Length: 94
Image (tube, rainbow, N blue to C red; front, side, top):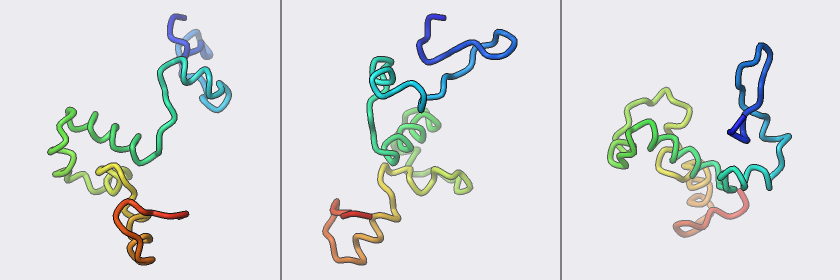
């Protein structure tokens, strides 16, 4: 199988490997770098919106679990930082 992220499942169909069983080095070799979850969510939102950043900003899919994270930061961590008086980008230990 040419894709190192896939394996043969029951019935001979390709399925995705369990990334938890692969190890960080194997994931990196396959092109998956370590990233913060909010950034990963932002990339998925861009994918969903045809890679148009303005469309991500305008997204009306408010039932989507990624909607609050679509700007690439956690609004929940940002709100916690504001409550503590931290400046922009200073989210602290939350």
